[in-house]
Image (cartoon, rainbow, N blue to C red; front, side):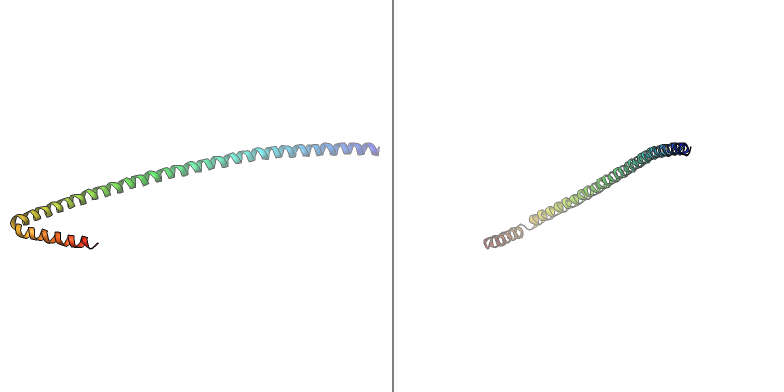
Length: 126
């Protein structure tokens, strides 16, 4: 009888072991599924973060473009103002030179000859 009990005990132990193994396999499968969900959540969070960064970068680029256009517009406006000022200065200089030549033609010719002579001397030295 002792052998029969042992065999029955062994069978019960095997059933218990099979049940524990089955439970462990179920738990492992459950953990794998949970890990898969967690991985998906992390991937989604990463995608959301990347989208957010992309949107912020796009906004920064738009802001930089707007600022660059504003600066270019300001520079263009200043250049036009300065060009107009130089144009007016050149016109005044031309008018003053014309008045001087009209009022004192001899002096103007003498000055022109002197300047021409000096330029000739300077250019011959090279």
